[in-house]
Length: 137
Image (tube, rainbow, N blue to C red; front, side):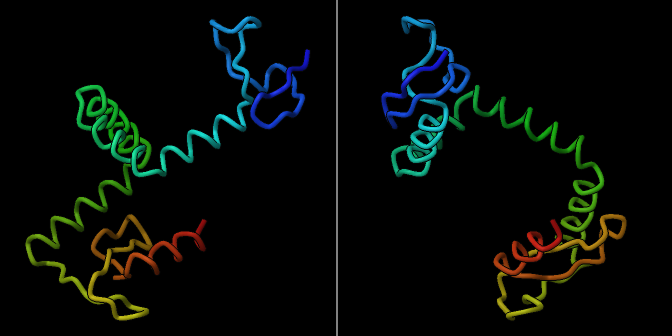
């Protein structure tokens, strides 16, 4: 069974639409792709960011964040442990913040080449750190 999206006008199979109990056929009148675009655009807008900021301060938002952090820490135990050791060493003075190895920017971040060596870090600015992470993936 096909349905025509009221947004893009394309005819798509019914499984390309989200379920919606108040609609006659039980599915939303906009396809999943159009809904995703609309939601993404809203989330990136000033209003969307304001609403999200307020929501994350609610009890439900904080609870969701705690659950997410717990899962992340369980799935990335070595990474989390290495970061904690390195941050504690930085705070205590055993590690000293250096400028970016590539561009010399003083706002630098720690990059671990090997999480089994938590104090062996490379100092990179945010831009070069993200570039290096992209290359490693």
